Image (tube, rainbow over all chains, first blue to last red; front, side, top):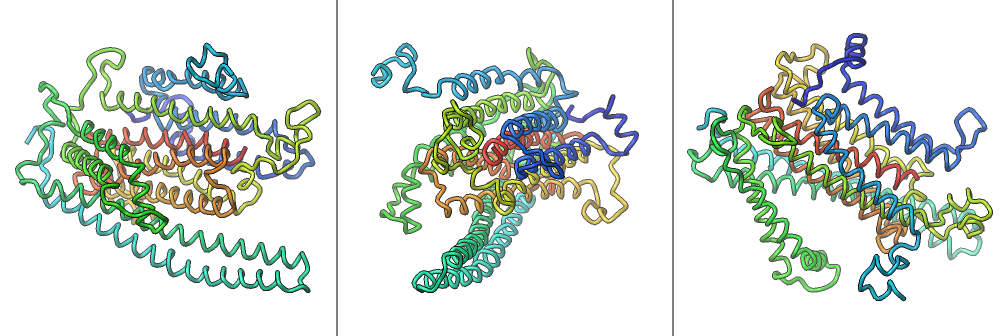
Length: 128
Length: 430
């Protein structure tokens, strides 16, 4: 339990390079961190005249975040290889997280002060 | 002594007290060198820069460019002074807490009769019914009392630091009792866990974790709740951030957008102050790398513990990893050092932001300090647990039978790293 048994690409990496998946995961995490810092720090893609827009930064940050998150959860936290119940446990709150991100974070810019009365029972300012 | 436990002598517990002494010495030396030695020199430079600027301001012959230049020199000198002063004080405070934590934990257990050790309640026999541990409830009671008394505790601490108000002992009493309970819970937990040398790990007997280690399942459920905690910070941040007209949002806005035509400089976020300059972005970036490296070192500690055929390296690393026991300990020390570096750099960065006027009084400051502070607190709690792991690795030791202790702590530590993967881009880069 907890140890990662090499199979598939992990075994291939181990055979070819002599380094295990932890090492390569570490390298990937370091590289992508450097990449996301660079994406924000530079105003143009180095060596080109292409401007790094806000949308591009959004894309890079979310994409790199997903890759790094997967690397940490799957390999360092051993979710890949451990029984599925652990992955399900880890993913269970995602439903609530998505609800929060959508319900609080991205919708209703006026927040609680403008919610309909049925959402905010007994709040004086809700029905003003 | 149980079949699955090691007998722990009182002298072993005194080892923790000795480690506490080492941390106290490190803290004092670091504070003397950085917080006093270097910081005082930097303060002299800052004083000179301040005088130069004020003299120039009163001199009618000074041009505005020269005045700007002197102002930036003064600001730079001030931030440089703050870096060393804050780093010195932070290391001293952290090492003092490490020393108190290890010292009290070790001493409480060392003072008990020698026959009392050997822990018959954790590493129970496979056929024996588990009787549970009192440590979590004692610990929780301590945390509750500490938080109940926390508001007055803060007032008393401010009075002690001469920042207004009068110090009254009763203000710290409830928190102090809470801290005592926390230490008692921790010491009791150490007493139960230190003799544990593997086997007899409690296994869940019902769905959904049937056949799995109960400690591991419990830790995952705990991580599940932690995901929710950080999600609340993140969704709050997203909620306010989408509404702010930052300079970046204004510049990239088009006709019809809510931020179109708004004057720049109306909203300043932490990332506006941090991301445009290498010097200001550096602490956050180093912290990101530090957490990733620390995640790797703790994985290496686990891998070494679980490796039945581990051999010492033949290159220069053999000095750092001479044998299995010391290799595990040194990997854990490296993790502790990197985590401590994270806290030091975080507080240095905060001091710079506060000096530049970005404090907790604004909505932007409030969400930034609360979210990154909550994360920092998680790192610090992890460091306190790590102290115990280092102590255990240096005494009883970890191997393939009891290495899961490192694995379970590692899960928490990786989660803290994972939370930073979200916080860093959201609060520092975007």
